[in-house]
Image (cartoon, rainbow over the protein chains, first blue to last red):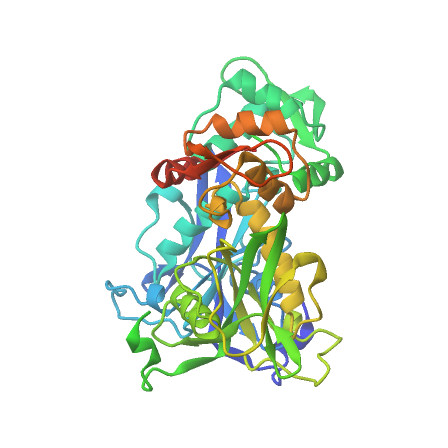
Length: 231
Length: 231
């Protein structure tokens, strides 16, 4: 957080803003954080200050609107006027103040993130997102497309709890890619990388047997991501 | 090209512009098209009109500055103020008019594209790009990073002449990814897709034997790209 960006002398851009698609993974489903403004729902959105990096603006906006910080943010697309004023305007005819919006998505461990919000918010299943303000439904869709493409190079495991089972990791990939993998092949593939650390603990409370828990060796993970992780 | 976008009533955005990284492939090398403005070189750049889609603006700018049209354009990143005013300013202290620039890259068949330019331009080898205005050197670098990530999903073969040899296709992948592939494995991989059509003709004039020429079945290529092409 740069203090200079919030000094009154540092004016905000008028034509451009940022929007954040916060993606969490919980109970085998992807969820997105949406906020209530009056009677409408939207993504967390906000201004960019003139002397601020765009990515710093996205971090600041996310912190200011949700209290969430230190998350992995990835710029994925700039949305223009034509997308932003769709034929079906929002109920109260609200128009975005800015003409262009730069979309970021963030990957968060659902269990670790408790948004610190004064207003209403909701972690909403991807399949159940309501009509949002502006072009925010399109943004979520494009964020997911970008996420799928970035999958090989992204620290996707950050969506998992700190300790997880191989089944949970497989389910995460399956959910994002909207396809299924053969369990044995997928586990064999994962184990061909060296970033998974098998823990002595097992997960308890699951229906059948108690599967082993794993965690990520972050340094090895970063190295693997540089070359891209196949699946 | 939308005529409305050039009507005087349709004002241009002041804080945002577009920049285009035109990538061509020639003689086993990637090249980028740069333009001369006074004594400086830069990428083709221009304004976005208020009622224009950002991608339409990029197409228009490319046509207006170079005469090139109908190329594959891909938005890859929005660049903010902090990147755009680097410590080492350009010689004549030129500053960009806009604060944020949205970068596009275009893939072109080098042989088919003859820029129709009044001013000076140059197809410049990636390894020999001079100091460009603004943050344009950074933009080229990031365009190449984006290109590498998009490789599985992009009509990369559009960088090739209409008829090409498997060696040329391999060289294209090798050049973009900055690595080498085993010839037999790579050819086997390519032939595992159904979008390559072997022609009865052979390439003549090459040093040793005369390799077969291939062309792309565009429909099958599009289908393959939807799932992503492995390499």
